[in-house]
Length: 391
Image 1 (cartoon, rainbow, N blue to C red):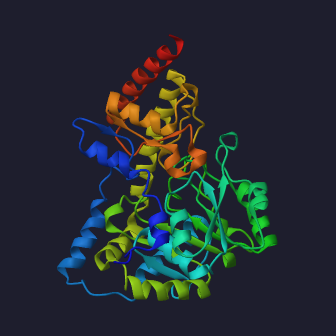
Image 2: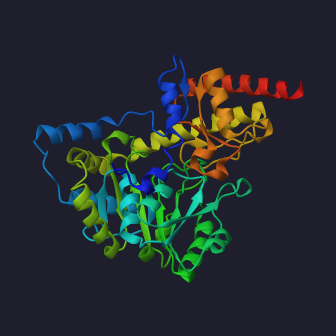
Image 3: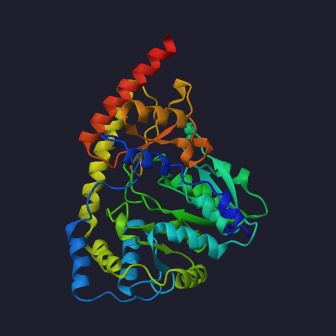
């Protein structure tokens, strides 16, 4: 009997995050700091709109591209917040989360063997989705000494004649790193000179703590070569609603819509109606959540300082990326032992690429009370490790 499975799919490793989730789910009284999901419930006015849409029988397909009212609100939002203008009819597509936008964007743009530059550490989907689209991932290893920002020279060093696309994953999961306008301008210059397109994953755009996020699409001559991906999961605590969007050049959006049409049909109708309200009336909710995350961020950084654990200050998303190299253990060894001995789950940095070795991802999408308990356990654990080294 022939092998029923595709060779390329077999080669792809499962997500390095899931292993720890599975263990925690079976471990009594364990604390998980591994989930990249807001601990806030979706604001009531957004939920009410979803409920109202069901009560009114708005349960039918929308257009493939999504409700025009939602696409219009998204374009108003992007103009208002990030100073970039899109046509809601030709340059905007509603997707099932930002993840679908990443997948179909790569499939719409890549010919077999074309190269995609992927800075790492970064979100786990970019590399496998590139492979599944027939492209070749080219990894750019970001450096702690640069605060895990991408430099123009790093892009230039990775470019070949086969380079088609650069993925720009900022604000970054897992590091919390951001790109400021000067950083983006330098990268944009290389992209224009080398004729490279950009997939800018801006799902954490509303969660920045130093200054307002800048989209590379807003820079001169970059809108026509950028796919801007965003969604509602992180900013509006709507992970389970499965709703994202992508804006970009009409020619690319047209082909992405075609793939979306055959594979998905349309994003969930109830979620789309709720998201219209999120766009219209959700700014205060976003601000409240951002302030809470910032308080937690500062709490963790102060806790790390007090226990002498090295960690650069992240200014985006809701993750910290402390360095554990002093303990002479791999990230996986540290995370496994921490989980078994202290019942606290964190994610090894290597789940997000080889350059994450020696680091951990800790999410602060949790209450201060839970973080306080977890940091007490971390301090106890590393004190024990330091004592072991000295003995």
